[in-house]
Image 1 (tube, one colour):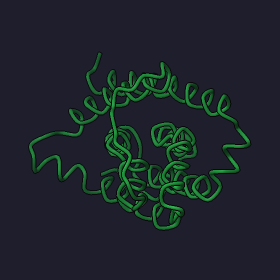
Image 2: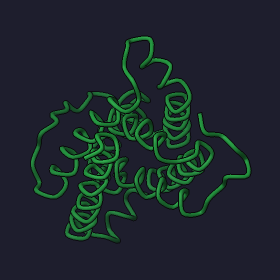
Image 3: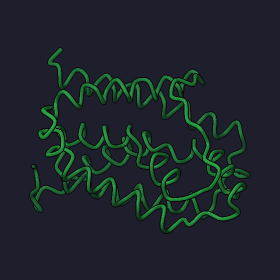
Image 4: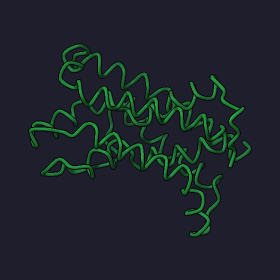
Length: 193
């Protein structure tokens, strides 16, 4: 595990923050959050943010050990993750629905914190980032994203009015293209191609 307090690197922090921002895609999830809020009447933004942060940090530190228990290495997981990220990006750019999710009847930590915020794509991305960046820089990226997620959850209705549907679509497609590039980079770096 790469962990050295002298290795805080603004470039790595910015990179990990942007990668996680794109994969979490909380802005693209605003319509889903609005629907969940409408069904439940209220979303506990603090609790959802804290649980998502906890899951991401836990997986960052224990994910590799868990993989070893089931006989996988981080590079293989990173390659698999590059495919997941690729398909998520294709959904964002082309407006396809590849991953099907059923909306829950009630809002709780399970559908909001996991899998909406800290889903399989986020977990895969964290392990993939670990092969490229120092752990403390990834932790800062997680913290910055959770703060942004909290802000979005608290202000969903205002943001929807501010961006409008077309603005949210433009953001989603732009981050989809960034994710495509990230997926290709992860694949190349871990396959040697």
